[in-house]
Image 1 (cartoon, rainbow, N blue to C red):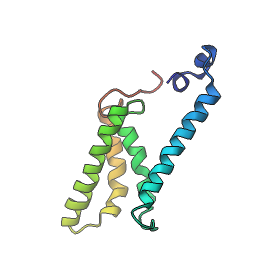
Image 2: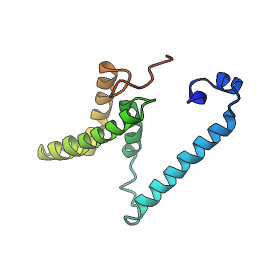
Image 3: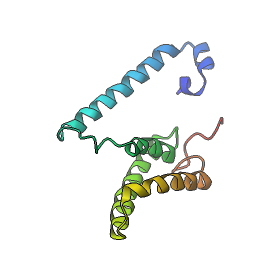
Image 4: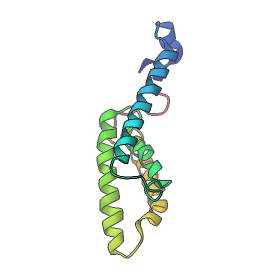
Length: 131
């Protein structure tokens, strides 16, 4: 956390900044590799499963949960999946509308509504701006 907040101060306190960043990158890559392996065990990944809009889901989940909040991100992930599966697939399919085409409209609207409602994230524990 010290490296994320202030690199110069953490370096002055004796923290190995480059090593800490490298460790964070390796751990993130490890989890990404494990996630990809688990995803691929369900069969051969098809190109229709790897869409551009699916890449925005983790970004939106982190923004909704708050950039510095683990509990907010976990709560936002469940909320976002319920929103996607419940609203987009069930309700819009009953209206006869294709859900993926509406994602281009609903993603920006939900992000703007979240920014207008609360800048600190879903549970209000995330970092805000430079504070």
